[in-house]
Image (cartoon, rainbow, N blue to C red):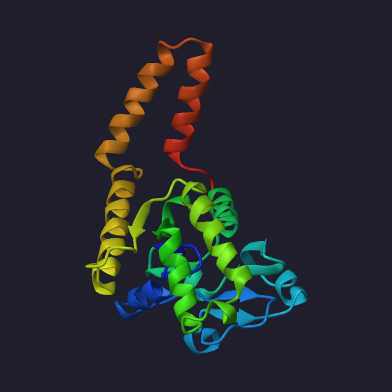
Amino acid sequence: MLMTLTGPTGSGKSTLAQALCDAGVLLIPSWTTRALRPGEAERGDMVQVTAEQMAQSAMLEIADYDGHRYGTPVTDTVTAALAGECDALKIVEPEGLRSIRQTLTRRGSWHQLAHVYVDVDENTAVRRLLSRCHGHPASADRRRIERAARECRDWPLACDWLHVVDNTRENATLGHLADEVMASVRRFEDRIKLLSPGSETHGELGLLLEGLTAHADNGLRDRVTQAREALAGPAV
């Protein structure tokens, strides 16, 4: 399963990603044209490349954010995750996630994507950013703080998230949050299996839609036909 983790600056998504990787999930690094920040090279979650390198490579998605270009290269890990052979994680902004969803829908692999949002309130996100600057607002990157506040307001509504992690709870450990994410992903996988071709539920839904088609007016018949096509799955 390919998992994406999205959250505002200061939400703790990178720390949660590390906890998931410690539990066996493989991390998919992002490519970016901006300079790397402290710790990114050591964590391995970000690789600096040129725009030309990105344009000449096979990419799962490419998105522009805050004046820089970001993307996800199609690596062996990505291919294995989409084939259901492993769990892999990608940290991504909402724009990048929309691009990934569009790409996977065209490829017929939409059911191998689980998108998770790490939620945090604006005050907590700003407090965490200030703590990275040792509590001195004068030394804080004011632009990043303003961006974090904007993300906290806008990003929760940017997608119909599969799962939302509340990372403001005082009693929630990283291990607990990682377990919560994986439990949600496993439930999603179970629902997909119920609707996969050959399953009993899939067959029952197909018969129901077939019956509706026979008794529907033209408008409803078109919508039912679309549902039957979706149930059959897009061509790979």
